[in-house]
Image (cartoon, rainbow, N blue to C red; front, side, top):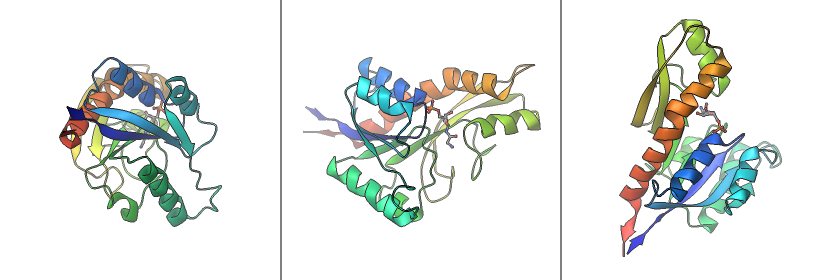
Length: 204
Ligand code: GAR
């Protein structure tokens, strides 16, 4: 029998990547892992509603409400993750940088989706719509998305999957963001989640 990898998804906003993970789990594309928990740093994130609609437990861990201290924020996250026996953390639009003290506790057990082809348009300051603004401003003709392991370097961990997406004349950051999500992020994030879950899952 397969003991599935226990997954937590960390979110901050709309949660379309979380939805892609939930849909992939329901469709059997993610079969070696189970989403046990969704954590948001923002109590108003629509992603929390998506989790609740899918019957997944949720938690809010807000750095601001914890006094703005990174160490306390990360210790609280770890407490919540440990209380649920989480083995794999998926950052799906989680807009907080995690320190080395956090990432070193989960080596090759944290993955992130980033909306560009790393090493382009990544690192500090490159998140959400800003990434697409930068790609359009530079004038690249191809962009895409990357799923990578998370280490102490923002967007610097080992790459797991990438998918290229064409840039078209007349694209705005919003149009490009939607195309990158539809053609790349929502596909490669569930695929990578299954690949890493399968590596971590145990047969008992
Ligand atoms: C996604 O495009 C994700 O790749 C990006 O934020 C968006 C979240 O959307 N993440 C980053 O930029 C992280 N550096 P979602 O909440 O609808 O999944």
